[in-house]
Length: 639
Image (cartoon, rainbow, N blue to C red; front, side, top):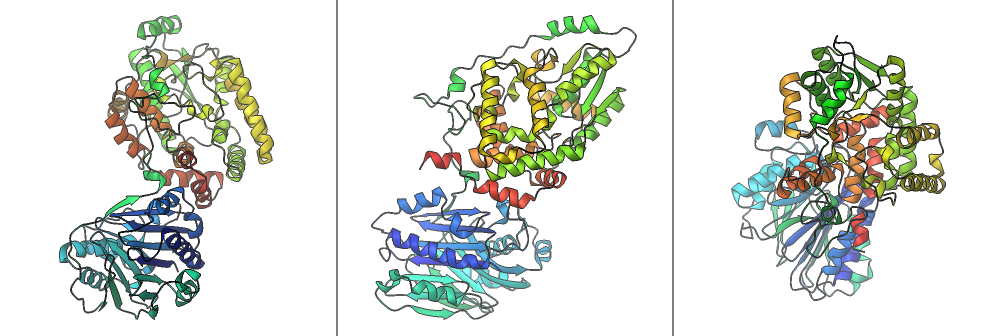
């Protein structure tokens, strides 16, 4: 099963270089028991800093934040140091989900576990206040310990009561916010060594690891003798981290605590998912946004150059539609209909408020979600509108996506992510074909929403976008050429992109950037109001939203959850950050509200990603493990 380890050092017992070397040695030894994920909690001062990743322990310790942690430990320590670490062999809960890795953090404890608890459902049914956010049996156990620790005031009794309720194997280490380290096992899979003279204590899952650790030259220079011992089943140890006082107890007979149960330490994440990026003081764009600059007041270049958006207005739209509107109810326009919120509201607006009679079309290229298909069917049925479907060889489309994702994972480059969606861009050409087939000249796209501008995607290619109103055909000639050159360079640097999708990609580029675009973009003319749009769709059409997110943007697009996960993981922001920043600039929401919203918006949509991976045939765990190991943009900034 998993490997757990830990170290306590009294003030001045070991210098920071020795501490770092010992931790690395213990991690390397422990990862023999599991290499799929790892985590660590480090105490210095009055803060317990923790990090966990779907990577082997030795690699996880290369995290730039952990490097900074050890650099920032004072050369002359006046406080104790402590660490607990975990090397995971996955048993339940994929390591790709952040919450499923250890250490587990509760309100007053941070802990790690080796073993399997087999009665977690029974425990949760007996304790309705225990509500884990992960799939970990470890979290259920830690929440149980936390519950008793808060109510019973002693860690010993908390551990004893928790162990009395579990079935299965459990060897655990828990650090509490009042300065205790608790070790407990019902199998005897814990070994420790202590040197009371020098003030050093360490533990590991195997006796062999302790023996190997003691061979390190660092321990040869430490005065005093190291006592090594195996913990017996149904026993525990409480260590006062500051004084290194050690007490022993039996899990069947809890003792009294040796430390007052008052909070002293705080817990702080070192993971990128919680990293504090420098953000614009006016909007929320972070320092990792490509080509961004900040002035002396911390205001970003996008806010400084922003000009309030002014739509062309409904009067101008009415004039255009009046030219085409049929008097006998026959179809008078072609409407691109993805089943997303913008096109769904556009269909409502054109039929109900503008008295138009559209034919809708959907280009179902294999990444239109079932939810979007249901919304399309629902709205077309209620409004009595024809929906024309155009679908390519979906098997080949999905196969092409898979090939490009595999190429990207081989050599990750943020500017190449839009290649995942290249197969979708042929919908522009479908609109041109339907215009000829139906004889209806007016084509309307429910696009042009300036809030949804995501210029960072091409900025990662080194291109500064010109104003184009979300009409990619309106790119400058220079930008089109530069984009083509960028992709050409990436193809040469990563020949795996030379695959069966190449022709698909070329057609996408041509139909998007080269072929003539004289379509009407609805949101160039009417205001885009989020609450009005969603309220109308839900109340009048019982429009369906996603189960795994409160946000309604992109829920009809099977690819969005995956690529936004990449952007947020590697760059620290996603499309949602740009969307909310654009709303701030237009005075729609406050900065505080935007920060609250993106915290929710950017939560990984694992269910949606799992469905996406299943459709295109990739292993999601393997893909997310690679993505999570990609060097982060903010890490490069601080090196």
